[in-house]
Image (cartoon, rainbow, N blue to C red; front, side, top):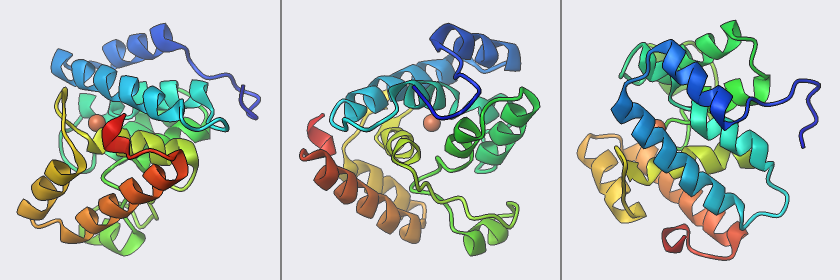
Length: 178
Ligand SMILES: [Fe+2]
């Protein structure tokens, strides 16, 4: 259940939205793998909104129908707005990159001057499930951090590590064990 007056699209509707937007099959495979993990993480949080997590995870990479760059979060949010999707889903889409992007970094990356840090439990779970996949292959936190550091995204790696530790502590289990 959710507090919005709007209901969330179910799995079938989300897959239709992705197909209509023109998402590639490899992106869909990645999305399904991330959604599966996000729901498994959510099972450790009695207060998590599972319907929102499922819809948000299924739609988190909607913007990759338009671009594969770091701006795909904003592009996905724009598509989601045009489709009249709930703000809770739009926020998951826009805030899912790494452990989020603070406003000053967003500007230097050519993104709108907007704080893109995931704050709600549902935003944090989807963002982190995405951090633990390379395409549709699961990786552990160590590997995820290595990749970010290698690309020079050291600040993002630091935030991803913090998110991993915080969620693991809140879940009562290391997310790598899920
Ligand atoms: Fe993703």
